[in-house]
Length: 317
Image (cartoon, rainbow, N blue to C red; front, side):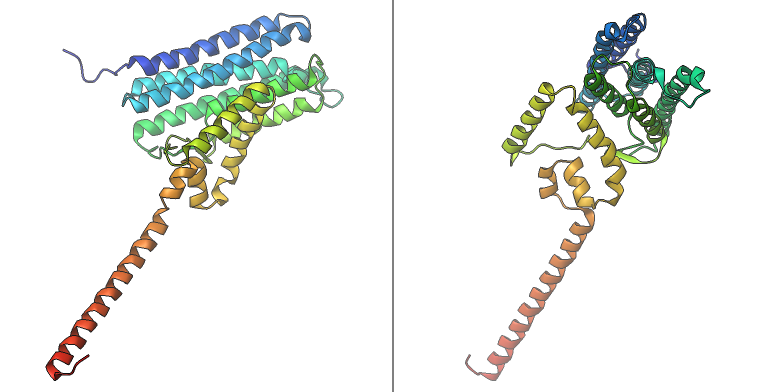
């Protein structure tokens, strides 16, 4: 007889999580191979391969959650397994990659050059630490039932943070090709990693897009636009992923100043925003309809009383 207290393990979603972990594992191995190369030109191929593996982990992470929700197979085991895989793929792999590919030679003031590599390692570790804290907080809130808003995440999710880091690293390598001296880009990446570290453990709300809908009305233009964007991303894969991840990061920062309807349009799809109004607008519409019905009833009652008076008086219309 099955013990009801044992965690349920669903095959398909957890296979996707295993794919996520596999990509993260091989990304780390590939980075280690690149670290053994004496020249950056020789190591660049390994670093680019590890970036593609991190993007692959992002895809698996997207699929495991979607499949679990579609099949009603969400479980505590799946959540814990997913967090462990995320820490490897989106915590360890990006931190290790950036510390070796970008942050190794930060230009420090004279007299501190001996600490250049140590500063890069410290920044990478801060990113990894904050990613682990973010995942632990998410799991604790889920267990306590305090994270009930499926539309948003508290703090930027670690897959999106890793996607931003990976896409920016891809862009830097592409722009500078085989140039090991990255100049100001070193500090851009250092600032980005520290900023993302803060955003992961912050209370800033980022959309989850779990409620993004699909409707037949207007679906052809949306499909066409989506196809164009995907095609453009494939063609310009060195540049556009950094644009999309940057847009997500910035959106979370400006989200609090947007109206509820604008947020709904972005997070649940333009189609759903046209059909469903915000709660405040619905309440206002219901009150207006009730007032109009009351006025119509009063007018009808007044007409009936007038007709009754005319009949009693015997006067024609």
